[in-house]
Image (cartoon, rainbow, N blue to C red; front, side, top):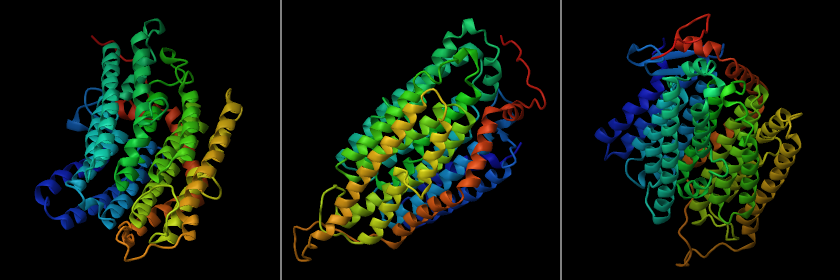
Length: 517
């Protein structure tokens, strides 16, 4: 048992109340504590990820209660990769929030930021379905506070819509957990995987209903059509650093589907056979198409980026819906890419807002910092649209290759390629209106009182966006080793015996569980 595996959850959980109690009125101290905490999270996550590169599984029992009776925190290749991605993203988002002064436009930004990290990291590390629900609620509460940071009627309205929609998901989650516990007497994922393998197929109505409900809950988190309506307004209205951090939140839904439906409800289990390909792949393809159409039709840059997130999640879910090791490996590679690309574009959208006072996709006079902002937008657009040479192109090739010879291969290839073309047109249109055609208009007179108040973005803000772009380039350059690692990760997911034996402490054997009273 390793005590370090719980540190990424404990650190932000302790740091958040400390910031509120000890540094409430000192923004400088809050910034130092928050940045130091995130740097420590990166170091912890990197060390944990390195420890499991050989395929080993780490775990921690809270209160030293053995599974399945106690709460377990589990780290394998997948969960440690996700917490490392979250921690690295959080650092650059935090630096941008400080550099653009977003963190000082409302109260308790840094405390809520730490609580948000606690919820996300806990969701990735938990080995128990009920505690997955608990961490979902933690990140939901913290994300609502971050979303309405700095106030505003539109932001509050979008925040209420976001909370109501996710509360519906939480209610369905509780119904699913109740059904699973009533049928099996456990919510530990490793224990469930054993018990469900021996359930009589004739008595699986409750299990099947619960599996469908869980899929709906995770689809809400992943913004999968037709459960995506909350995302465009919520992400577009949220403060830019918050929206950039939210790029990882949709991946929590994707992660949950991968984890639960490869371990607890794998395709070969009779209790849930046929569930995986019933509607998940068609919904993913429709999500991809709607995201591309939204990019083309958007009238504001933040809406354009929000719809690109819907499209990117559609791409991720297409790969996941194949439910093959090759498809999961492609999805995991694309998850890293889409998280970085979406964060870059959300921050670039805010750079545009700072430079010209709005994010309307209309021709206006040149803004401060046009060339550097345009360069970052160009790079982010290439990545998100899937054009070479960046990782979006490689990720889509991996997804297309995984879909080769599958029953719906023609539909997958047609929609992926068509949506990519539509996205290219949409991003090209936006870049042309905001950056290219702006030089055909004379800059506003400095003495003109009717001109909007604009400013030049700070160096730290540009540095944060540049850091994310550097990571995106590294993800492209090292695509081979990264994909090899995600392939090993997918193999571990489809052969979870090591995970199960470590958590249940039954090394070398996995047998039928005893009957419960």
